[in-house]
Amino acid sequence: MNIIYILLALIAILAIEGIIYKKYWPRGIKAHIRFGQDRAVEGDTVELCQTLEYTGLLPLPWVRMKFRISRDIGMPDTPNSIITDYYNCEEVFSIGRMEKVTRRIPVSCFRRGQHRVFDVDTVSSDLFMTRKLIASFGGNSGITVYPRRTEIPQLIDAARQMIGEHIVRRSRVEDPFIFRGVRDYIEGDQLSHINWRATARTDHLSVNQYEYTSELSVSIWLFIEERLDMRDLTLTEECIRIAATMLGTLIDDGIPVALCCNAGDSGADSSTLIGHGCSPEHKDSCLTALARLDTQKEAMSPFEFADRVPKLSGDNELIILISSQTGEKLCRHIKNLSSDRELFWIAPLRSDDEQEPVGLEYIKNHRVWRVVCER
Image (cartoon, rainbow, N blue to C red; front, side):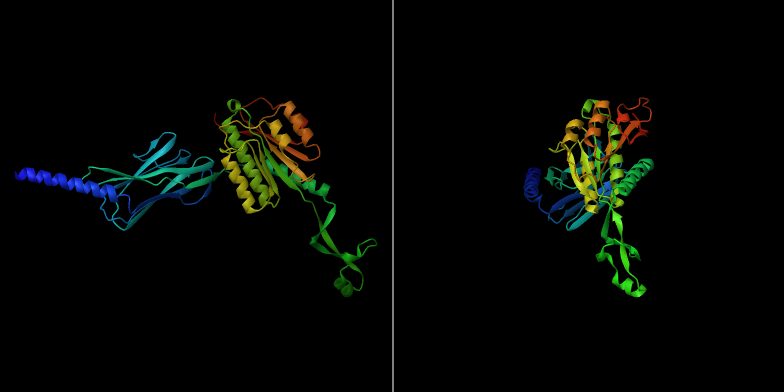
């Protein structure tokens, strides 16, 4: 009889303990995963911070944190990680009441894009290991990985040379806000330019001199192969890196830059169009747009897109077109559209591709850029 009473008591204890854990388990436990920074560049190493906090009353023998993250974020090799379309990761914590535990894991940013943490769950059990207790916290933390800069000094020098020639050719108006110096008065000078202090000091008429400026701006046109089955994804990524490098360098030089691309992000946008600017915020917006480009869906026809792109800043505009897609028809079409503006066409091709691009003979300023990449 005593054994029966003992068994009944154990069953009652297990039932009561199970009811208590089932009712109060989610209370007091918080799980959060975030990146140590919200922006990075391809190839960077950043921290992934896993935070588990428990303020509940029930003792927990262990807590397992589970989450999913993009495969383009390189996680350390652990026995608890499974790679499918995502990294499925698990971490086991030992935590007591009123305790907060944070783990910082170095991860690598393999590829550009916006990468997020999904499905953050915590799993535990009661003291007798008879129940599995689960709490879900979703997951909305993410990081934007910009395209890395690539070594293209010859292309940048060529673009800068065209910009310099454009400024010299178009600079005809003095800028009254950029003072250069003082010189003697010459018949025909404007009376408003007379420097009366210098005149009084030198006892003869002197006038102010101002620098000549030109409101030159640059538009970067990035054309991605329209059809997905014809697209070389490795070469496409290199085109995006060239656009990011050219854009960042020119903005650092203080030149207003616009970004136009016939592809959009993973949302509803079918193309990308960002107006001119040269502020740090504008640079971040353009790099974010390049990071979000979705190369796994069809792009707009370059003919249709070129017809839609407006003349963003009048005649004082240099177009830098980056496209490995050429052809006589496309090149002549672009030439006609940009007849009143400067055009510099960059055609990235694989280094082992012996075939020369067709149609570039119609473009006065062009450069074929050979890219070394694995197939």
